[in-house]
Image (cartoon, rainbow, N blue to C red; front, side, top):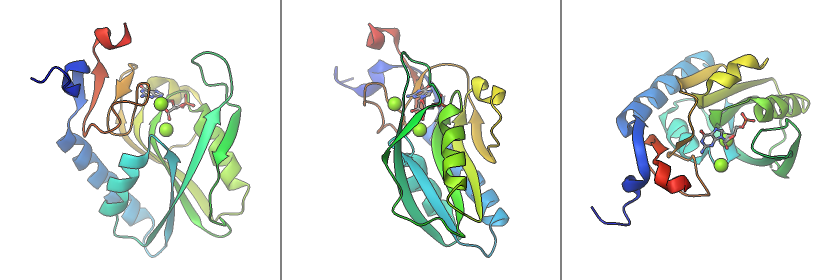
Amino acid sequence: MDSNDVSADLAHVLYTKDQIQDKIAEMAAAIDKDYEGRDILVVGVLKGAVMVMADLSRALHSHVTMDWMAVSSYGSGTTSSGVVRILKDLDTDLMGKHVLIVEDIIDSGLTLSWLKSNLESRGPASVEICTLLRKPEAAKVEIDVKYVGFDCPNEFVVGYGLDFAEKYRNLDFIGTLAPHVYN
Ligand code: 5GP
Ligand code: MG
Ligand code: MG
């Protein structure tokens, strides 16, 4: 193996490329069924959701438009405070639209909980959430997530959009980092 090979930084593979693609297809089928006859505005939360957005939107048969938001959580340390700042807002007027927020992972759920209320205040017909991964902590928050890919272990994961210091987003699978990467 090349010493610069990114796979040397991974400890375990949690979800393979095939497992992710099968799950995305399963979620897309459920979404198509639920939204039958309605157009969907899918909103990707930058940057983590780019891979899920790209694959999920291509797996959908419904009429879809796509838009993007970038948000940052205020607060000190590593825990999400739930106070959110919009770095890039949507270009789309949400009035009367069926909005589907697409996320890579929900951890505390605080960011998404804030985002959902924010979008709901703009007069859409509906707002639902789709996430590829959900950590156990998220279950403690009052947030209704309609589409969940995998309930994942409470470990720091990378790949398929998820980063560590902006790296590993380009992996087509999801895994945990080897300890030498942190040190
Ligand atoms: P929360 O749900 O706590 O408000 O924030 C979720 C955000 O934290 C995700 O969108 C993601 O950017 C980041 N995050 C949470 N858990 C992980 C993880 O295991 N790996 C990576 N790479 N990012 C995570
Ligand atoms: Mg995210
Ligand atoms: Mg990140």
